[in-house]
Image 1 (cartoon, rainbow, N blue to C red):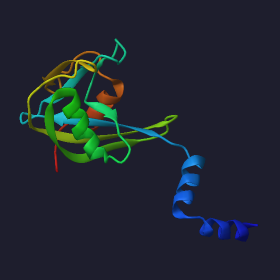
Image 2 (tube, rainbow, N blue to C red):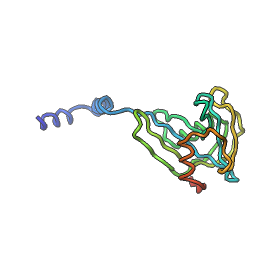
Image 3 (cartoon, helix red, strand yellow):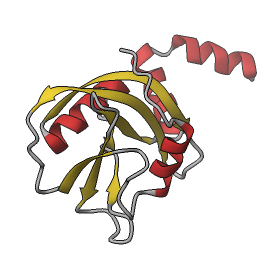
Image 4 (cartoon, helix red, strand yellow):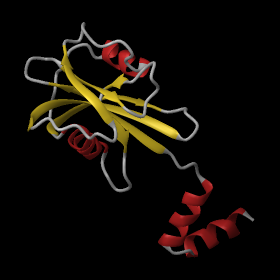
Length: 155
């Protein structure tokens, strides 16, 4: 039986094999966070409109789109939410184990742009020293910063 299944599998075209694998395995959304610093080492924190009122503050964050690298997601999300441009550095974290979500985080450095908030998602933006962050920061972002207290951005 195993030989027969292997033979049938090899006979299937690549597209059909890919579709069968996709249908039989978990599909995840990937949340991507950017730990963005300016030239003075301050962190970009955003007050998100759609996050819980008790913890509305966090770093730029969003979901990866199909076909997009995680680094591209960081650049896009920062640009969409704030109008700012960043250079993405090293990978800081990969976490899984959530129901249908995985999370990754990268460090990033401000390179330009003009601050223009997306009013649908972002209520406020601040550049803060790491020791002077607003109350209500997402716990996962507090942990991320504790694990990565100083920037050593690459590119």
